[in-house]
Length: 371
Image 1 (cartoon, rainbow, N blue to C red):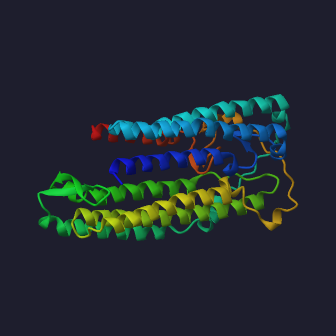
Image 2 (cartoon, rainbow, N blue to C red):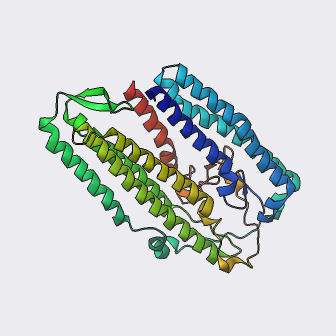
Image 3 (cartoon, helix red, strand yellow):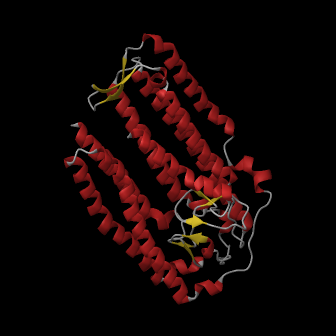
């Protein structure tokens, strides 16, 4: 199998995962959120809502699959790294436009049915969460030390092997394990992989930190059960973050050993790589489906007789298709996403705006360095 075909297959799998997650969006979001729009939970069973969800999924398949095929063909026939790099962003943009279209339809349905007039007047916030329960809701941070130790081992290997490294250090291999890329010997080149590992650790830890610091959403109809679900949700995802980071750090250490000439079994490395990526992807999808956003999809025995009320309508605080939270009056910097799984920032706060802009700045800097 040629490297071009492998590259096309890899890109296609990434795009397919994005499409699957988009289609699963209504299934993993909170049960009272219709494509970013908050509606009474019992209204989710109406034919109008079901038709919107079906239409959303159908349009994603009708548009998403052909576009995926076209992009894959372009990557195969046009040998241009920029097409490969931009294809993911292009695909995300197309999927986002589909989402915006159906988000608008959801808003129109809510207005037509006057569901906004059914909103509650009570907001429940557990002010003791961060103080009394944060430790119980996540795995202790000391487990990140495992990844730190792996990074230190990788760094020690680079420093130890540096004097004996050749003037041209291998940095890239084809699918058959043949070296097809080199960099001049330097301390930066030798430490490039450990530095990448440090960056990965920072990114994953920041996700963990956002989760700890994010404002919990409590169902006013049964705050205690809602809080129990949120704790289960956060603990499960904290375990996922730590396990994922550990596996990735082991993978990059193996790659560093290949660069240093300590390890050279490309077949074994590829098997391990695909296994790790499979665990990470399948794990995230499984957790998203089973838990839902904030643990909203978890089934607890205590909630069998819980009524389905409609808490306060805060759609006005979410911008750009209910994807950006903007509330200057909310002191929270990190909040749960309105759609999908995960956390976002409060763009209405200075630090929140900083964290929102930072990834785009990093992408621009990386592209400039690549050029």
